[in-house]
Image 1 (spheres, rainbow, N blue to C red):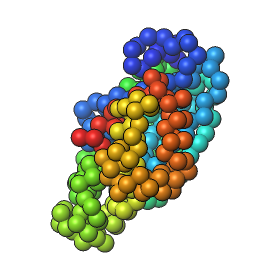
Image 2 (image 1 turned 90 degrees about the vertical axis):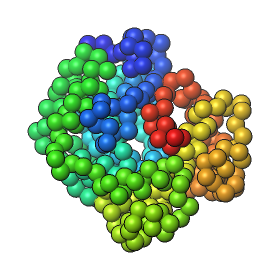
Image 3 (image 1 turned 90 degrees about the horizontal axis):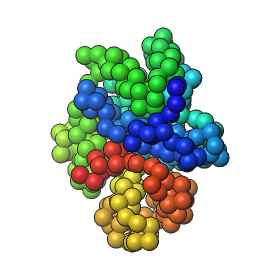
Length: 282
């Protein structure tokens, strides 16, 4: 890649600061993809510890000069070091789109990472080659998008019932799985089976994950000095702050204040998650 550009501004990054930026996908991918992202750790930066928590999604990512990989839905936190000089591009799939895009039940990929060529063969290798020769990070992300568009077929449509269940769960509309299943016209057992096939996770764990992510999305709209955890917890759908703390520890391995302090240190002004946050706050 001939130089690296800031994915938001299109200018070169030279200050040694890691960054993570998201944007919306091209319209053809909108039913399948929440966001397209670019991560950059410059050569003059220290190694960056990237910590992720469950979000109900899967991701296809490609580091420059590597074969693309598929990261399945998480049920707990994951942490890995990103070396200086790393440029990676990726797409975050909509919860429920994984099986439609990849062609196998999503439940088989939960908490797993696999090389995309194990699933897409030569197509994945070709995408990796094109990404490696892109002239900028933005161009590399566009290459990955184009490869996904080419991989779609007439049979790639996500399960519409699961898509509606996900939409309701993301926005906190359903208070329990039974009412959610009734609202979309199926039994609890049917909903559970179809969610596991399409998303990888049953509705109840998804509800917990989306509630956590909604809380994080709310906090990202506020300055760390103004954090009212009790208020934000209720706005996100938790019963109270104690409920928030229990679920936070369960899903992230951190207390809310510890996680928010880490985010303020590592992410403020450097990470843009609006494309993923907006569906949770609509």
